[in-house]
Image (cartoon, rainbow, N blue to C red; front, side, top):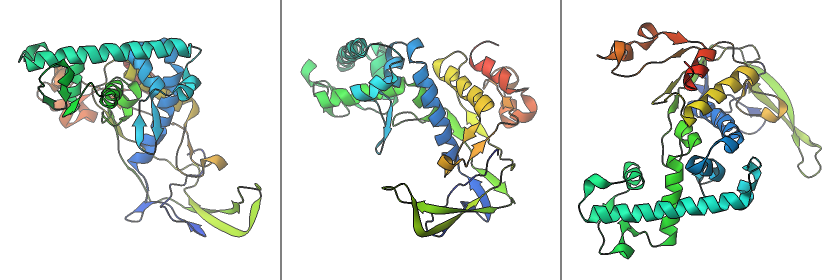
Length: 317
């Protein structure tokens, strides 16, 4: 840790304690995941000019709010992340892809109603894969998905949002309301570490000045403490957009570090990457044909350093 770290337990008052489990300070998986997501969002939006089609629209429409991750067209939001592209052109592209999606889905649902189950296309297959149930209707205007008629504009909007969610590289890596995400983070238990207390004063938000008689102490893990993160990445294919995005995240960590936890605005939580090792293998192939690597990957699979891992993710190895 380049700077002291505070992962709060949720307490407020004069003493703000660290999150602990069985007496040990813990960095929960959700904290790691949130920090990685923040970097992935920034990098994905910087890639807008080199993305195209549904992937680009998914990144532009991506937003986080109280209800979670969403993919609605919001011109004011999208205008912030166009990367120099014309919003008018993007709106036309969005409407065109949405119209093609709906027409393809209608056509594929007709095939479903006619029992031509082998002719499902990408759109219908994707909707079924993410949990939509199909019900045959009695005509094109009555095509039904999940019990809802797709002539209803609200239903169409929800279907298209979920379609964008399936094609979003940020969601593919870190999850959204449709995908679980390919990166799985483990809790980090720091064990027996020293703890310090840092004093602070309350701030009056209106005046911007310190409040009188509002003194508190924040527990922190001191700078220089080592924290190990273990994560598992499932089904990443070299050269794909989500893999290239993950490569960018790793390069960010290598060059700029990672800031996690509370009180980041006053400099807490900055972590530097000292070392990283990656074990990569394909299930059922080569040495893993009988599950040998899966049973003991750290022994059976050769490791990569961070530069090699970045090259592998980009399809350069």
